Length: 343
Image 1 (spheres, rainbow, N blue to C red):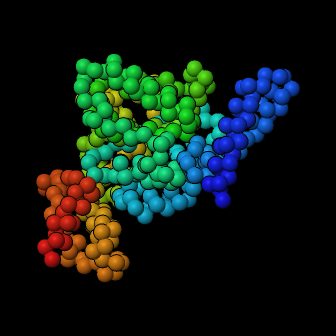
Image 2: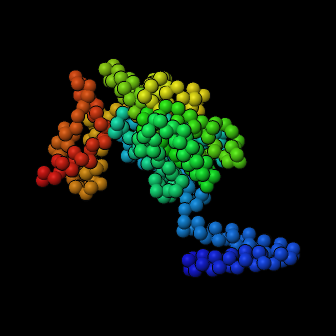
Image 3: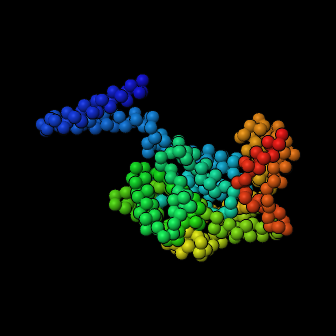
C-alpha cells in the first residue's frame, strides 16, 4: 500500500509542477504552489519511510542501549565507556550545541578504537556504518602522498561541506590520524569551531572522531605504573591520562596532530585513552568470537582449554611481566581459526 501511495504522489507531484510551469496566472500559480508544497512534503515523508533521510526515524540515540552495549562488548576500557556515553548523550540531546563534537581516541593496536566507533554509529544511525551520513576516512588510503596536501585539503573540505549540508548530524571518523600528513588536519578546524554557520551551513551538530596510536606508549607506561603499585586498573582516572595524551599528540612529529591548531586552539572536546589489554580481557574477546562463529552455542559450553590455547598464541609485553597483549584483541579471529581448525 505504501509503495502505491509513493507512486501516486510522484505522479501528482510531476503533474502539479508541470501545470505550475505552463499556467503563469497568478491565482492559479499561487494555489498550485501551495498544493505542490503539501504534496512535496507528503512525498518526502513517505519516501523517508523507505529510504534513509536526515530525520529522527533514521538518526536517534538510545543512550541506555549505547551504554549497555559498550559495557557488554568492550573490555578493560572503563574510561572509554564513561566518557563516550556522556559526551554523545550531551551532544545529541542539545538541539543547539555550541560546537561540533570532537572526540580523539588514543591507544595501542587492538584496544578497541575502531570497535567503539562502530558501536556509536550502530546506536545513533539506523543503518549503522552503512549510513550515508557516516564517513570513515582512512588516512593511509585517502592521503598517502605528503606532496599532495593541497589537493587533499580541497577534497576534505568538499566531503565535509557536502555531507553536513545534506545532514547536519553527519559523523566523520578519521582512522590512523597519526599517519595523516602534518598540517592536513587543520583544514577541518573551521568546522570544529564555535561559528553559528559557515556560508549558511551549521556544523555544530556534526560529530568528528579521531583514531590514533599516538600516546599509546605513554598510556601503557601509566597503566603499568598502576599495576606495579598494586592499584586496581579501574581506579585510573581520566585526569591521570589526559595530559599525557595531549602532550604526546601535539609534540610527536609523526602525528597528524603535530603542532596542529586543532589541538593548540582546544578544538577537541575530549581525549579518550584506550588502555592496553590484559590476558583476562583477551580471553573475553576470544569467547565472544567463538560464539560469533558458532564454534559453541553458549558461554557454558566453551572449553576453557581451547580459550587458554588461543590466548597463548598471542604475544605479550613488557618482556618481564608479559602482562599486555601486543595487538590487543585484533588478532583473535585469525588465532581462533587456527586453533579451532585443528579439530
